[in-house]
Structure formats: C-alpha cells, structure tokens
Length: 470
Image (cartoon, rainbow, N blue to C red; front, side, top):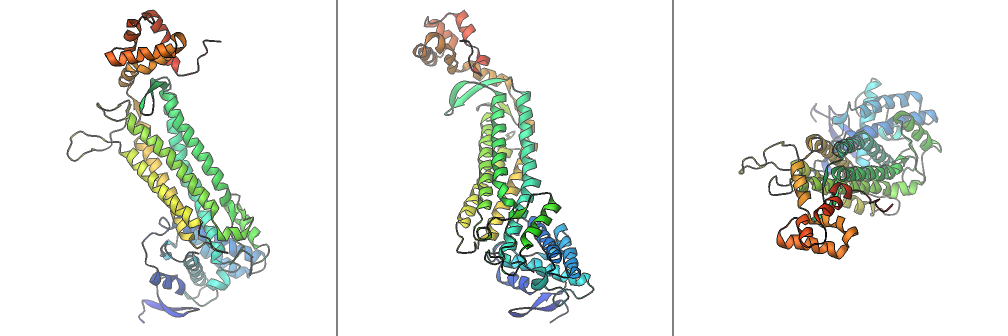
C-alpha cells in the first residue's frame, strides 16, 4: 500500500484508510458501503457539534465517576472540544442514508476523537493507543443512545439559534406594519367574495397572531427535546454504564449550554420511538401552514397591479418575465410557500419513520434527524428572506383600497339594524342589477334617504362591535 494510505483494523479485520484522515476502519467501511445521496445532515455542523459535546461530557463524566483515568478523559475532552468547535468537520464524510441507528456516524466520531487524542498525546494518528475509539471514547455508551441524544442536542440548538430568531423578526416586522397602517379601512373578503370592512391593522394583526401561535406550539413541542437518551445504552437498560452516568452527563451538558437537559424519563421509549422529534416536525408543519396562509394573502392583495386586487404594494426585487417587459412577480411569497410545501413532505417522512420502531429500537434515526433539521434550516432561511425582501417593504395602495371599499355592496350590512335584513338585501341586489352605487340604490327604492344612508353606512364604524344599543 502506498504512503497515501495506512492500515486500520476493527472486529472485521484490516482495511486501508487515507493516511491524512483521522477517521478509522468503521468510517471507511461506511464510505464504501453507503453511497446513497450526498446529504450530510444539513451540511453536518449541527450534528457534528452535538456529537462533540456528547463525547466531551461523556468522557468527563466517566472521569468524575472513576470509570476513566483522568488523563485519558482529558485527551478525549480536548479532541472532542475541537470536534464541537468545528475544527474537524472535514473528518465527518458520511451521508444520511446509512444504518438506521446512526452507528457509523457515532463510530466516525469515536474514531476521529480517538485519533486526534492519540495525536495530542504524542502518538500516531489512527488506531493504537493510548486512546481507543470503543473502549475509551465510547465508554458507557451505545450508538443507540448516543445518536438520539445528538438528535435532541442538534435540534434544540437549530431551533433556538436559527428558527426562533427568524420567526421573531418576521413577527415583529408584521406587528410594526399593523401598528403603522392600523387605521386603513379596507374591504373584507370571505369565500373570495366581498364581505364587510376590516382594518389593515386587523388583517396584519391576524398574521402576527398566527406566528405567535405557531411559536407557542413549537416551544411546547420542543420541551421534550431536553430529555436525553444517553444512559440507556443498547436497549434502554443501561447495561455497561455507571448508574449515575446519565444524570452526570445531562448535568454537564445543561451547565455548558444553559439549557435544561435531563435524562429521559424512560430510556426504552427514548431509543425505540422518537415521538418528540415527530411533535417538533408537526409544529414545524403548523408554522409552514401559517406561512402559506400569510404568503398567499400577500400574493392576493398584491395581485395585478391593474387587473387584480392591487391593494398592497410589494417590493420590486427582480424582473418577473423573460418575455413580458416590466412584469414584477411576488417571488418571495412563492419561495416561502415552496419551502412550506417541502416541510409538509418532510413531516410526512418523519411521521412514517417514527411509526417504524420495532421492539427496542427505531432504525430511522438519521432520516428523522435530517428531515427535521432540513425543515428548520429551510424555514429559517425562507422567513429571513421573506422578511427582508417582502414584508419590510409592504405598503397599502390607499386609493385602490378606498375604491374597492366604496364600490362594495356588502356595506349594506350596516343598513340591516335600521331597515331589516330583507330590505338591506333588496338594496344590494338592486345596486348589483342596475349598476348603481349602494347609496343610489337605497334612495331609489325609497328605503332610506341620503342623509340616513350617510349617517348609517360608515365603513370605519363597521370594523368593531356595535355599541349603539348601549
């Protein structure tokens, strides 16, 4: 074998590994046997960081409990810290579609950390000593509890560091717009037909409320992510681990991250089902549904500009057609809704995968993690872009809004308390048939005079409960 390769061995025998790499035999076998796709858990960083933190605090916990020598634990911790901080990301080449327990990815972390620890100790990179991937880095652990622990750590970090800030920013943009344009009275619509008036502040305030509800749902679903599977080892019984290992690692992770991590209340469930990840995925789908509604409202209100509703103006970011000069399209709304539809698909995959736990293990872990992280990443990016390039630039087209409002036949609703529902309906129908304004129709039918109509039909007073009877 050339100098570009070194020989590593595992329980299955020897295999060649690129000499410059930290990974070992099991990672190399996975590279050879799993060549499906190129996805690496949304470019790998969230998962690699989580694995580094798990291995770092597992080693220090084992030292604290007297299971590992302090010197060995320190070497592992130093190498694992480099993994968590991103110094060794290129050493994690494995794809999503591998063994369903994530064993190859766990061993990838064990091998890289052991190799780097040996190098820090002055030894050779790769196998040998003094640090062994299984005996030392993986002490008291199984892929079956390490990987779901990393799933939760990575998901919590991505939710709190990426998704929630993007969601909060978009929400605050809309809240400011609702305040700024709160007094603009416009035509309401139900069934895509004219309805009674609303204020633009109420319309946008509805969007704000949807985002608030989606965030509350997401935060509630995410509570279960603080429960960690580590300590369950192979089948949830904790075989080959110290009785206080789980609580010690969870405490250390909580102290470092500032998040309330704790041992899972039932390790068997934590290994064999990932209902918490499914709950998070479902909450992401709820957010996606809210975003579709909001984006579609923006598209409809901005449609035209001359032959549609044209009641909102959106930023003109780029040409909208290769053949129609001057055309501008609601591209940010389209991108956001495409992302939301993709999230629906991811959620369907997670839901099916979570249902497939057999006995003591669910073997769809990498898929579940990837789909959830992808949904978080896409939603965060899409909301940030929609906020910057669309929501912040939304403005009411007041003349068009006023024209549509004045032409509406549903203002007849304001006449009902005075002349009754049936008579008010006659006014609206007569105006529609004869092409008259509502005011002209009411006067022509002799049901009201002009002064009464002007006093009773006031669109701005139709946007809140009527207290005239008090």
